[in-house]
Length: 273
Image (cartoon, rainbow, N blue to C red; front, top):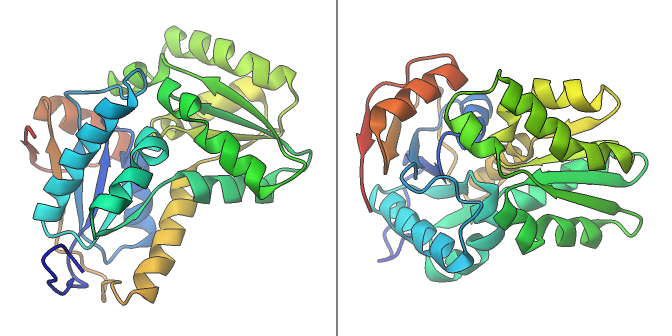
């Protein structure tokens, strides 16, 4: 039920949001796993990156975005942002009636199922690492799990700028991944939705013996099950459309999204909240 008690339409859209283009790695999974679903995506590009910001700021931004998505009539919201999943989601679940899912728990469950030696690395934004959300969830799921966390603040701005094939990326990844490599991890959680766009470069640095976990695929699988159980899954194979909104400059987002999704996403509207 939405606030106000209106019945939720199963053909209503799924809402997704992130600080920028990173959440498109989650949107891509929605398009793949839930081809009948329409989406409304909000990129808070005026405030990217979220990592250095404090909790009060992040909760305020996320509350405004959630209210905007609810006004669009979405039936379900995916926090396509690890920073917001770790800090804002527990708070906003108490303030809104629309169903929500975050990336932390599904990503952790997948990592625990994949690890052999119990040494799991996490790279994420400063705010996500500071929150301890991944470490707490991992330790809660397995007694013999050792967690090695690493903040990687330089990565999001480089991905947002489309500089994924540069020496700067290679140098940053070498610096951030070295301690995890030394710790002997066999599984790495990509704890920011921007990082799957660097999967090849990360594997080049860590070697093929380390499995990468993108929480997006597990999160969308969990969302798919929840939508079915709630009777909210769309029927058929033809979504009514995918709509994109940003708080910053629309054309920069549109160009970046086209690169990451390998297709023209159509018009992007600026909505300042």
